[in-house]
Structure formats: C-alpha cells, structure tokens
Amino acid sequence: AMVNKTALVLSFLAVITLGGVTNKFAYQIKDVGDPAYPAHFFKKPWFLELLMFIGMTLSFPLHWAVQSFSKPKIADGTASESLLPEEVGDRGWKVRALIFLPAMGDLVGSILSFTGLVYISNSTAQMLGSSIIIMVALNSYIFLGRRYNRIQYLGMGIVLASLLVVGYSADMAARDKTVSTGMQEYSASQQAFGMFLCVLARVVNSIQFVLEEKVMGESGFHPFEVTGTEGVYGLIMTACVIMPTLAVIPGSDVGGVFENTKDSLLMIQRNSTLDLVLIFYLLGLWGLNALGMMVMKHLGSVFRAVSRNMQALFVWLIDMALFYGLGQR
Image 1 (spheres, rainbow, N blue to C red):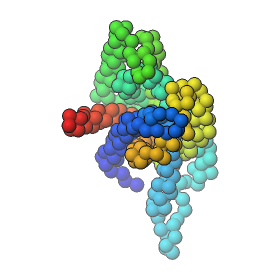
Image 2 (tube, rainbow, N blue to C red):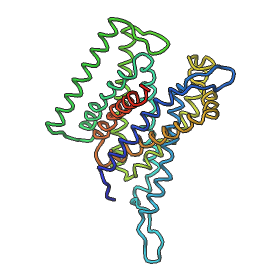
Image 3 (cartoon, helix red, strand yellow):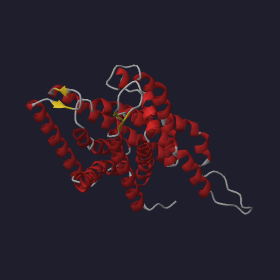
Image 4 (tube, rainbow, N blue to C red):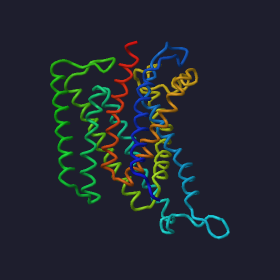
C-alpha cells in the first residue's frame, strides 16, 4: 500500500511530542494516593513504562482493521486469503518469538536510562540521547549493509562533535561542584557513570531498531503487528517481574520502596486531570513505537532515530511557549 511519507513523519513528530509533553505534565501533578501518606508528585517512571507497553498492545486491533480493509474481495464478496505469503504464515510463531529480543532491548534500554537519570539531569540525558543516531547508523552499516553519502557522514560527524561537547561540559560542571538531581547531590564520578549508562541505553536501543527493521524486512509482518507483539512481551515482563520487584526494593517512593504501584493506581483513581494526561501520554507513546515502526519500514532506522531526537526540540519549544504565554500571568 502506498504511504504518504510526509504525513507519516509529521504524524510521528506530533504524537511523540505529545508523549514528551504529557510525561512532564504527569510528573508535575501532585495529589494523595495511599491515604497513609501525604500528597506527593506522580514521579512514577515504571508505571509510565507499563502504560507504554499497554499502548503498544493496542496496535493489534489496528493491525486487524488494516488487514480486514486491505484484503481484496473476490467475486462472491468475501475476503481473499491472508496477505502474508504461505511460507511466512508457517514460520510466524518463530518470527514472533524473535520479536522478544527487541522487546527486551526496549526494556533494558529503559532500565539503563532510568538508572542513569538518578545521577544526571534530564537535559543532559536528552542531549546524550542523540548518540542513538551514530549507533543506529553504525549497526545498519554492519548488519544491514547500508551505505551513506558525504552529507550523511557530515551530519553524523556534527552529532558526534556535539556529544563530545556535551560530555566535556558536563564533566567540567561536575568538577566545579556537585549537581543535585532532586533529593541528593552526586560527585563527578557518579555523574560520569550516569552519562555512561544513558549512552549504553542508546547502544541497546540502536540494536533494537536494527533488529526490528530486519524482522519487518524479512518476515513481511506489518509494523503494527511487530509493535503489538513487543507490547505483549513488555507488558508481561513489566507487570509480572519488574513492578513487583520495585515494590519491595528500598527507594524514595511512598512506603520507602522504589516504586509503589498501589499508590499509583490510587492517585489515578483520585485525580481526573492525571487520568486525562495519562490517556494522552499512552497515545503519544503508542505513536512513538507504532508510527516509529512505520517510519522505519518506509524510511529506515536511521531516519527514525533522527526524527525521534527531534522530540526534545519540540517539547522545549512548547515549554518555552507555555512559560512566556502563561507563566508570566
């Protein structure tokens, strides 16, 4: 099927910006969850990760709708056979099993990012996130045989130079004084460790991108089907393994644990504004993954990485517009 690539990219940028903005809004909402504890901010990164995987599973109904409308009709008005070749259908379960790898790449990347954010500021992490462009390009060169022209190499060189400047400036700032990321101040070595984890997260995500592109290219699976399958795997792992573990690990959330899921659910039940923000967040994160997969199918994983990094720019512009438009009143 023909796809309007311009409309696809614009839609992708719109929804990932929505996800970024609503993420920030959710963190700024304060209310009571568990009545045994006072009001607090909804700083629940792993609950938001759970919502992301729930959103990804919603790609299945869309995939089934696309398949239903795309099947050509035969003379008696019934739908013809599946669009997938017979040999793909026979090995479909193997492909779905393989999709477990990029799904876990998404999860491991999140673990590394969340841990790195303990030691460095969000703005530094956002800038270091641009390293995924270099990583995806390198992995695409090695594993997909992709080649680049001089302009593309120049662009990657500029990104690399920018990353070196960011890393150097963060290191100099850390040597001058410790930096607070909320509750605690961290030394230069701890901040360097945080930056290393954030870059390592992008390495894992770059491998995830290349695996996803290879799976779609060789299996014939629709991007929505790949996204939905990843969502099922991620949802099971997050809900059944990670969240119960975080509920007993000591941390700064209410109850003295790393993240209190019961408290998260009670806050959602109590605060309708939070409900609305999280619905839009779920939509934005669905677009980040499902539309991102569509972008990758039609324009490549490097283009997806570049587009995804534009999220920080648009979120910053919206923040600035809100500050000057509403903050001064």
